[in-house]
Structures are given as C-alpha cells and as structure tokens.
Image 1 (cartoon, helix red, strand yellow):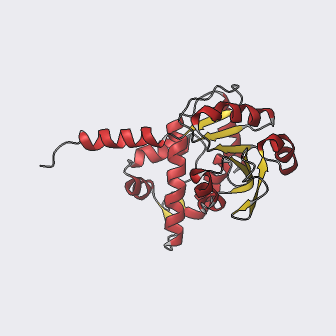
Image 2: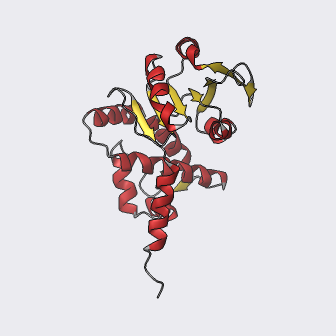
Length: 223
C-alpha cells in the first residue's frame, strides 16, 4: 500500500487530486465500515456507488487516482480497501488534536465520540476564560491559550479546532500557527488569513443551512 500513499503524495504535490475526490474517499470509508459491520467481506463499485448515489464509474475513477484496489471476479475486499483509504487519508495513525474555545460548541465537540473512531484524539483544550482554565471536560484539561506553544510541542499536536466567536478567531489562529499547528478546522463564521502552508477548512453551519434551504426551496415537484 506504500505505492498508493506515494502516488497520493505525488498527485497532491502536482494538484491533480480534486478536493471533491478526497471528500468522496471519506464517504467510501464510512460505507465500507458499515458493510464490514454488517458482515460483508467484499463489495463492488456498483454496490458502493449505489449506497452513496454515485455511479460505478465515479467510484472507479476516484480510486484510480491512488492505485488499483480491485480483484477480477471479486471486486474490492472491504477490509483491504478500508486500510488503503485510511493510509491515503492519513488516518491510519493517531492524530493528537487541540480544541480552542470551551463554549457550548466547544464542549459539544469535546464529547463527540466520532473523533476517536476516526483516529483523532483530543489531547488538550484551550480557553482564555480564567473560570474555565484548569478545569477538565470529558477528562481533558483546559489550558490557558497563552500556553498553547508549550503544550502543542509537548503533546505533538498538529491539528486544531477553533470554536470561538468570530471576532476572536483570527487572533486564536495566529497563536495556533505560532505554536506550529499545521491544520485548522474553523467553526467561527469568518475567513481566516493564514500562511499557505497551514491547511484550513471552514465549517459555517449557517451557510450549510442556507444551501439546504436553497435545495428544498428549489427542488422539482414530484410527478
């Protein structure tokens, strides 16, 4: 499977892998895990695509970016493809994770069990509220944001979640970058200005609801 990983790295360096393909890999992974839990040992591009509303050609094209994973007359071995996709996504290793902002959203994220299942382990939480610093949430200690540089280095943290109000998000992001954080998942409804080498994904729930409202408001009438 190292060949697949090398191909991913080369393709990513050449900007040949569309973000939509990477997003679909995560969907394939979830469905494969469901299939294994239901007792399936193999699957096909037709079955996998059908479960997600994609064509079999789309599934094969997406996977072909990273190598050949199918077997003639068998299709895909679910466990093998799960391992391959995890290697491609980088989730075959544990990722220590930091959360900044322990308001309602931050506390809810601290309790989300899916992180650990996906290979992400919350290693530290940060806030600037003296009333929260030093306490624990879900067994994780809350540190002063001023200590992020030391804690991130001690615990090997490379990824962080920002769950603070919009006016504070850029300052928090700057502190994270200064601490060596390489990837940021931003829940604050604001666009961050970060160095190019820092990967950023924004999650604006209001925008997602606007897209959902548009889809419902403009759906074609049933015939």
